[in-house]
Length: 165
Image 1: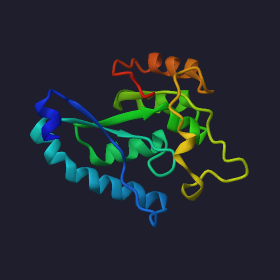
Image 2 (image 1 turned 90 degrees about the horizontal axis):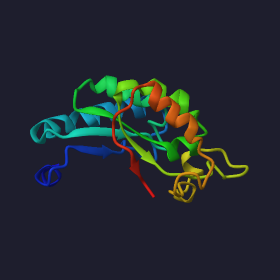
Image 3 (image 1 turned 120 degrees about the vertical axis):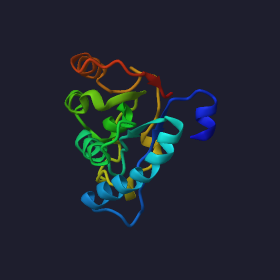
Image 4 (image 1 turned 180 degrees about the horizontal axis):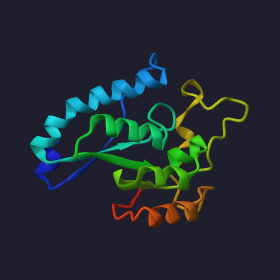
């Protein structure tokens, strides 16, 4: 954060923490709340806004998960970055998820993919591989950008649009 702050960065996306042996939903959420609270003093020192990102293969995955973590940390420097590709891999309804985030949504990762293509495999961590997260240009996969844009308009979104291709 020190270097980012020195070059004028004011917002930073963070991924949630995870361990292979940590599979219980509630425990993952609680561990993330505890870990992020430890980052807050550093974020305060550098006046850095942190945006927690949804992940496709471990918690937090959904808007409800992200809101639980952000509300659990309860600090003005923590918000949410929604990755539309990760949500598509999970098969989430983009409109429903984004509208749940409301003013906690500060950033977006926009790209495209074709969702979970693991055929007969259940979408879980041990079956996940990054090759599902294709990071194609928008409209080259099957992400519903109409639903995304409608949700962003409905919540009055005014944050960043980061094309992650």
